[in-house]
Image 1 (cartoon, one colour):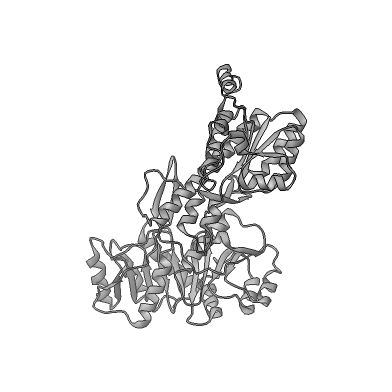
Image 2 (cartoon, rainbow, N blue to C red):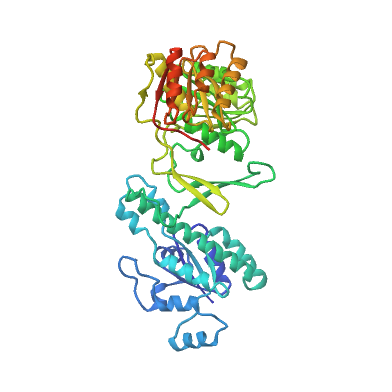
Length: 516
């Protein structure tokens, strides 16, 4: 029996080859793998001794030869195939241990050149893997070092590898090569800066962890990450304390992080079930931002997510430790703050130094539907410009709050309304089936949680246009003085006229932010 070994990931390969050799299996190898095995006293022969043809073109051609591929593809119980091998003086190859050039590691290196990336596209490796996998009944093909022990155990106990295991290894091959080809495709697409949607969408993700359950306990769940650096992403955060993140933790925290990235000034976002429940900003003091976020809705923050774009200090940590939170994420923590937070055994404390870095604009937003997916570009814009459509223009203070509220409402489930005052949310109305309900919900919650005057002098942001003037009417009654909305309704003028009647100001962004 013969085994062909050519691996980029050499983890455990020497020990595995020695075990195969002890079982009487002849070892054939290539390039760097051959040198590694010979250096460790494995009695391997070089591939050129099998093919009778030297490696050439700087190693680009090593295994692309009939003596390799006929030896892999011949069906052993087909007399015609076996007779042809005999006539051509070709031996069968019974084991293929191959993993591919380190394309992923290459494209993620700093300052890597296109030429270096292209040179790390493996040709012979995938060809061997696919040939061996196609003939899985007769060839044992291994791509993953974690499978070495499984194969050895079966060889030692039964002197063969079971058909079921061979079929499992076949699956691993096509998972490996599909992932590899997808990485190459996406690298080239990004290198060309191609923003068109391809005819066939090939995406590849790496498994990070399986979860205890999914959105609900009766569902399973798993976390995968994109290939590459994923800078500023939750998947790169370092967990400093607490239980393993759940499916809902990850989903909710990701939403909070994306909202946080809209802000440059010290800001804290509290989130619950994918919606912000309290957001606070301050020109210089992260503690003041924390107090604003907390006091915006000190009820819903219970069991929520808190993310900060500045260091968590001792004062903030003390107050956080006095309540039930699921997750905290920040770019850094003072030593004392971390000491305090770690006293809460189950509190998930995450470190994300590059917390403010946004997704690349050519990233996809993907939603699963029954039988397919729908894909769109990410909502990377806030607004291009705005138009004052009322007689009165907003004051500097109102405009600051309008922009603050517009950032928040972008991440509120539609129909979404956000109220803000002094760079603090005072009411958030998410996910209602009509806009007036969201507006009334905002106002009611603001008065209930903060006080009856919470909405006096506040501003209102709406993720999409007002179809009627009822939202303006409700806003005026609550003491709201300024509104930001996309505009574009057939009856826009009704809302404009109502604002003018009450001396309110309203600006149109001409851009909506539905979040479904």
